[in-house]
Amino acid sequence: MDGGDLSFDSLGFRQVLGQFATGVAVMTARDDAERGIGVTVNSFTSVSLDPPLVSFCLDRSALSFAAFTGAETFAVNILASDQQDVSQSFARSIGEDKFAGVVCEVDDHGAPLIKGCLAWLSCKRHAIVEAGDHVIIIGEVYHLSMGHPASPLLYFRGKYAKLLDV
Image 1: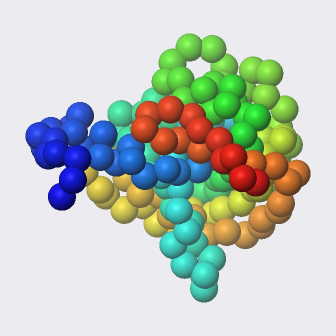
Image 2: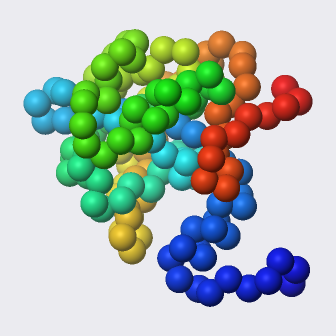
């Protein structure tokens, strides 16, 4: 293969995985005290059409781990290219309120929906699968909607990227 071999440590593994461009989404829910929680992910994917299932991976060390794994519902907020600041806010592990300055609506089951996204999916927890230092949270979609037409926010080689031909 071209490009040389990387040593197989976590850094090399991350570098190779970074060659795969992904979209960026923010998963949101409510904790037991009805406070909004959220996390930026690029591990979102469709799982099944019948029933309609999606999934995302969550690090066991995430501060919101217990809240997300305990939440009955969550929302997938698919970010537009002009929402890099939203992505960065929800990517923080500690600090200020992640929802500060972010305009949201709440769906019928309490999941926060971030304004300005390309699309939203509201999900009921279907399963949680153990997966190394992460879990895979699978949700069954009970509602979805399209946002404004725009380019998606992408992540590639450890940096945000944008499509040029949309």
